[in-house]
Image (tube, one colour):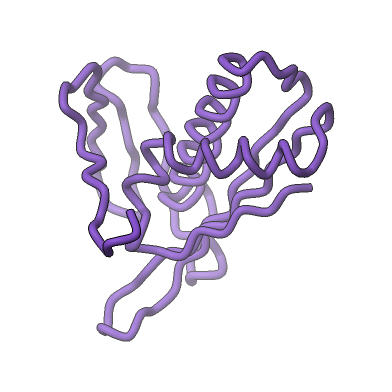
Length: 148
């Protein structure tokens, strides 16, 4: 889209809805409505907490890396590439922003050991267009992708 228009990445059909409820914010617990998730949530030590539980940034990192990896594997499979042994890890940082609130930054580290760097870069770029997390964050937070 070279004319400056922003792509509309909203779903045209909802195929699945995840539901979760948090009690106590960053110092409480979170459950999913299907019972698959039942976790203590706690402030990490870097933000002044005891770190005796998971936190929203870890959950976001897990979700983003799983989603991005799925998009990558789907595209690789469709194109006939072997992505055996591939991994995606995510680092999610949080800190103050200029509007007196807080913001996030994400760094994805992608490993595609069985494909060359040029092909890996093309697959990563394509996955970044397909992944719902990438589409949701595009233009909102800094997301960097590193091929290792």
